[in-house]
Length: 279
Image (cartoon, rainbow, N blue to C red; front, side, top):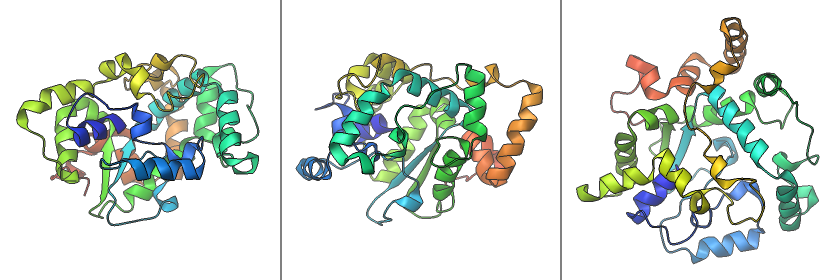
């Protein structure tokens, strides 16, 4: 989504600087507040900022468009596991401590580097069932999506789902351009869409991976774009496990949010918005 926003804002596949500098990730907290403010103040293009903070933790400003990206939580669990395996947490902790001090470390770094279960199936179920805050997992993800879902009627809140991007990338990019008030010439669309595809972003990992400017954070930058497919969770869930998973979903999310979180607007079906604006 960061890359899509960059392509729409600049109208060009070439980026003037690494994506993470054009679109800072505020809540990773690897820069001092003064440096972040200075970098944003120096920008002359339309700002597009990355955050993993739910909408109830952000100032709500009518001048800002809030784009929430959902993905099937089961695939999000697999993706999260890949990122954590690929990340040098010691590098992140050191950078955060330097920028904000040990008392201000984000939840991802609190308590140092915790031991991880060797079995990926165990890690999956811990992600699904652990409800110990501020542990990253299913409960936190559904809360995050829910804060946007509950305000989807607001004109400046946009819900986008990974499944819809996979099914019709150009259509979703055109929808976003319209909602953001950005006009793109017809001749430019094929090249912009091509640059937003998963394989192309993997090829440009050195430019577009989050925090790629931090030496040593990722063991392998190209692995940030690991597979990009949906349904990877099936390697961990058999028929009997689905009941266990769905019971957890019913406990954490209302049916409408649960349906959208797992399938996007196409999965939502006839109950979804005919205008495809998320409202």
